[in-house]
Image (cartoon, rainbow, N blue to C red; front, side, top):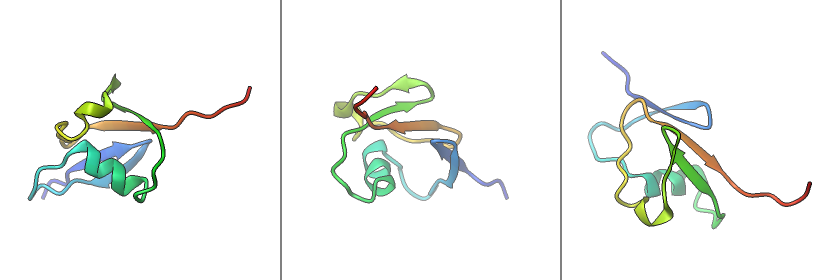
Length: 72
């Protein structure tokens, strides 16, 4: 049986193929529902926050979640 994964910040997670997976829910779960400002790219393409609810996550997607930091 083929395993279906997506990647967040280099770590693999199994995708639930029994439902549609959307970026906003994935981010909430990954950040444990903390209210943190982040930027998100899927397959090296920056996704605007207004599109997170409609962006489907598919097997093999590579997701990068980063948060800004201050200093230098």
